[in-house]
Figure 1 (cartoon, helix red, strand yellow):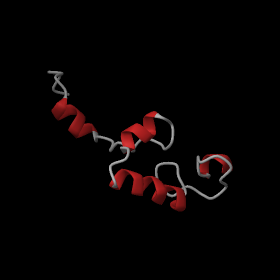
Figure 2: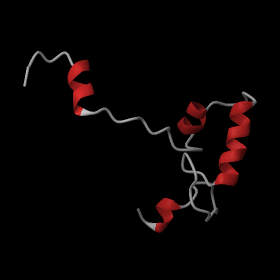
Figure 3: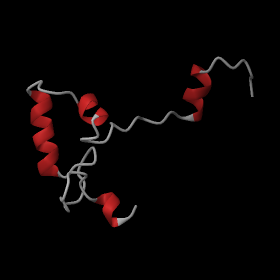
Length: 73
């Protein structure tokens, strides 16, 4: 990850990212807007105002159990 990739995505902010691509001060602004139901995290991500939530990666075993592949290997 380059230095610019570790910085907040808010324009002209050079503080390191804390969560969802935002530094802690900008994350807290967004968090407040979400908590007061003015916008959702999904809408913010859609509008490129934050990064989408990172999905949890499935293990190979979880993928196998959830797949409809009848291969028993």
